[in-house]
Image 1: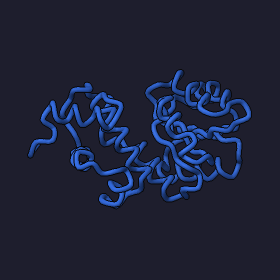
Image 2: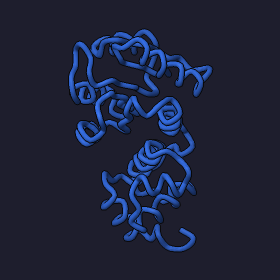
Image 3: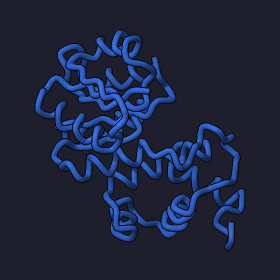
Image 4: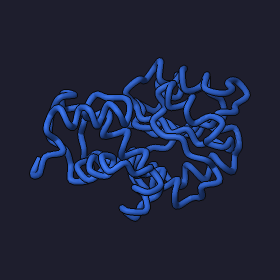
Length: 199
């Protein structure tokens, strides 16, 4: 399993790769400056565990790169790390099945926290069906905070984590329950008794 960083800016690519090597000292990090080099790189370096993708590449613009990566590796976590403001592209990227959108201006600590959450294997959601009720303590916390109507920013403040990390935790929760939005996750939680005391 390898982690792939696709960014044509050498300094940013090196910085993200450095973060990944700190998170996974024994992992393989592959740096690419073109999107269409990914398939050959995967054949050479092994199945992907994570993709970190810039939006503006010589051979891809906007969400086209997200579509290409998710089309070939739909179950591999994909973090878009872009210089573009989240207000411009985040919604389109998430709609295209990116798992988290991180602004490059967020800084190393926030990028690291979001990538750590994406790489975290504690939920092992792949082994469970969408209707499985086994939620982690953090996921139960999230459900209660969502039910209270808190925004991502407010949840981040309450839990003492970054807003990007909240988004990753929400993504994992959505994947666990087989839903795609806050509205759906709350409907699922209510109809399956997940908000009841002791659930």
